[in-house]
Image (spheres, each protein chain N blue to C red):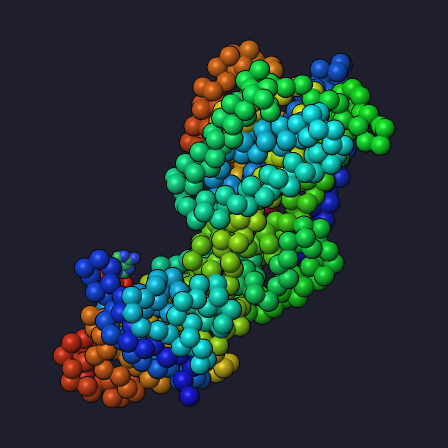
Length: 256
Length: 314
Ligand SMILES: Nc1ncnc2c1ncn2[C@@H]1O[C@H](COP(=O)(O)OP(=O)(O)O)[C@@H](O)[C@H]1O
Ligand SMILES: [Mg+2]
């Protein structure tokens, strides 16, 4: 049984063929990593899966349903959440409101009751704020419960995006370089957080350059190069795959 | 949460007191007249600030909705015998439907394109009001029969002052409610990042259309009341200059600030009355104010002052 199935997907920007005939499956309840050099098409793949880009060819099945033509907000409703390589925090809101915005699908957002602040709106909002505080604690942001997003350091914003993605209560979470730009101790904390997320029952697809992080947490790794699948397997298999070593990991990985 | 609620009631009570006590300082009815114009501009600007300041979508055509609200209510009530209140509501409905119809294509545009799209819409409305002489009286304008409701006629600036005051208070209350609700969070989120909002399940186009239609209806309501209050309207109410004036009020008072919209409307309504230079060179003065705000006070008056006070207090 696969949770996400990508079938023969292709995408070009002009003459630049970024994804080419790519197929792979993601089984539920595990951490899947996608690695590959810069420009391999990892972020583009995330944008295709989450409906931000339209594929030229191929389809995406989620939970057995064809979701290829869906809009980004519809895919969120299906149970796919994500973070962004270049931060996309709502800098015009407080940290807590960022997480509460992530709960949009579980909030009562009808216009007229909101306009008149009917008691059911305030009551539901209080519950959501409580839950948002719990999620902020879950990603170790309890120091920022009253902070405005624009006043938070980079490392905290990375975790705020993860809390916002968790707030959607998705089945599948796509993390695009969550450790990029973090120092070693912050990276270790993200490592632990990703495992906590997987343990809570959310399937994770991780794109990450930090090889130690990838090799440590991944149940399954897909290696992408030039928009094609170069190799696929467990961390051990990938580490010793000669193609991968030649193309990407280099000598340093073999010695580890 | 409870802090926000109490600060919200505090602001509303303060505003109610100002509206109630202000007339005590008015030496003559001319002041009532200016206050009514401030109130009507503020109602339009609060809607416009929901669109521009909170949802981050520009409109350079909102005077078009104001003018349409004025003319439709005037034509229906004065030429077709529709009861004034029904005419006002029908105008709001018509403007709402029009805004909805144009919003779907227009709100897909971004930045400069959205500015041009709304600018074009406003210009088209102004041209129609100018050209349809048989219906609107053309550039010379048209008289409007006075308002009446079940035989009661609000007569004189004092009564209109209370009507507009109550409507302004209601608009502020509803706008504050909306901002601090899941709908308001969705609007602010799509301003912060459209892709992230969509990834959180927010239907970005739907919420943009919603806020565009809401702001257009507020402009229409204010326009209809303006028509009944002044008793005479011209196509000038719908022109580009008036749209720009409304945006300047929002920017000066403060983007994403409900009370900012009110203060901006007050200042830019009073200035031309006080200073004849401002009146004579209004377009240039507006440009100057916008430039100064953008250079020295990006956030606008109310948020900047609130920041200063908050920093001094803590
Ligand atoms: N919106 C876009 N328009 C044009 N080219 C793009 C766009 N997005 C990505 N690309 C191109 O696709 C290729 C893969 O980029 P990306 O998916 O960001 O790689 P990765 O995330 O693996 O580093 C790059 O050559 C990039 O220039
Ligand atoms: Mg990338």
